[in-house]
Image (tube, rainbow, N blue to C red):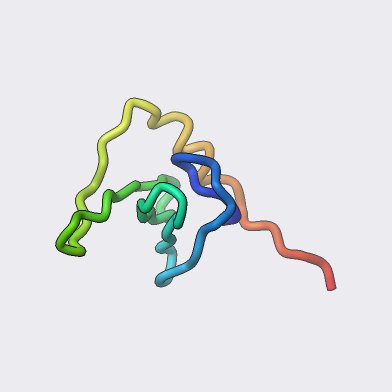
Length: 71
């Protein structure tokens, strides 16, 4: 996963298996089971799942495989 599905930023990091974090918008997301779930990081460090109206977009985004660089 090279970009954030919420803001499109490339400053993302992997924080676990199938779990990612965006430094630009400060959200976490998981990718698995054919869907992407986005979580808001709260001030106490806990996370809360966001509900979106863009389910078709996120399902299509989840189906995109990660691209590996050659070499």
